[in-house]
Image (cartoon, one colour):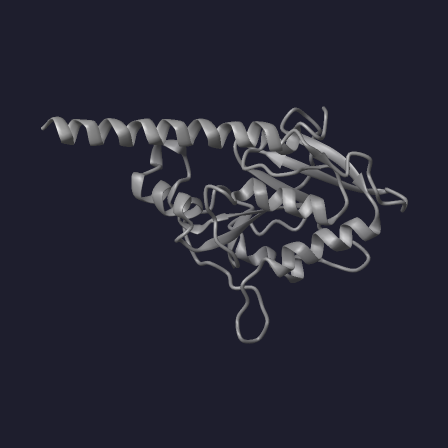
Amino acid sequence: MKKVMAWVLYCLLGLIIFALLYLAADALLSRISLNKADQSSGQKTIEAYILSNGVHTDIVLPIRTADLDWTSVFPIENTKGKAQDHQFISIGWGDKGFYLNTPEWKDLTAKTALVAALGIGETALHITYYKQMENDSLCRKINIDSTQLSILQNYIINSLDKDQDGKPIYIQTNAQYGQDDAFYEAKGAYSMFYSCNTWTNEALKKAHMPAAYWTVFDKGILRHYPY
């Protein structure tokens, strides 16, 4: 019995130490700023946003630009509301099971959390259409140029899993969060070391925009975009 108790205590101590190291690594590495000075020299006339719900971040871009209409990638018809007067689209990447089975935190199960943490589940892109955006503590407005826009667009499109015809694979589900969103199959594996926010941060890095060295939390990104 004493050996069992000692083993349990060692396991608990190991988990506590791991959790502390994990949080410390994010706290440190997320403060290391990459591209602190925006490295792109083009005219920043395109309105974009980084949107957080307090945990998860999305990239928000105009629905239509000179080279891309997002409704041709993510048809409005795949949303419940099918409204045609939106101006922006937000795109986030994450664990498919978490997206579809956890509309609220009270719905989170140990199985869903474990699958997501270990990186053994599938992933999805969650897209939401918006009529307008408002700059606030959880929605940071950023002005970007056409080169940065193109990099972000390609990053998002390359994150999609596609069918034999090269088209995004729509996930038919009743788990939408509202009238203006939809889910699509995605590439990659979500894990405790590569979260939805890591995905967003990597996009910002590629677009030569302010970003953290590494982060798994939304605050690791938002701190580089003061409100």
